[in-house]
Amino acid sequence: MKDVTRFNEELMLQQNNILLLKKSADVWQRKFIEKDRELSTAQQHLNDSNVRCQELQGQIKILSARILKEEQENKTLNDIFSNLARTLNEERTRFDRDDRSLKKKIEELKKANQWLVS
Image 1 (cartoon, rainbow, N blue to C red):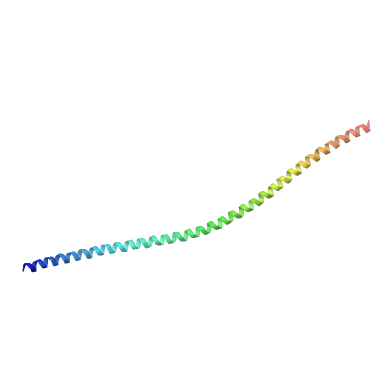
Image 2 (tube, rainbow, N blue to C red; image 1 turned 60 degrees about the vertical axis):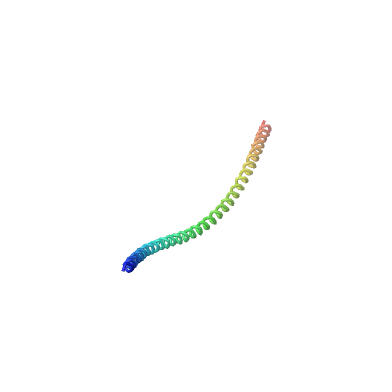
């Protein structure tokens, strides 16, 4: 009889242990499901961020190409302005030289005219 009582007590303990293990398994399963949802949400955010990064990379490529084109256009314009400035300086130098020469000739003609008049 003692053995039966002891067996029943052990059986009750085992059943309690099984219930505790089931409760513990349920708790861990809920935690797993919760963490799995968090992981899925985080993965979706990561995927969304990756798509946005790809969009931004495309925009960066477009802007880089535009900047390169504008830099080339600016270089071309700078070359044109440099050539114009050089030509302007050459023309100014030529004009100043011609102006001095013309003033000198005018003075010579005035002197010659005064000499003829007198």
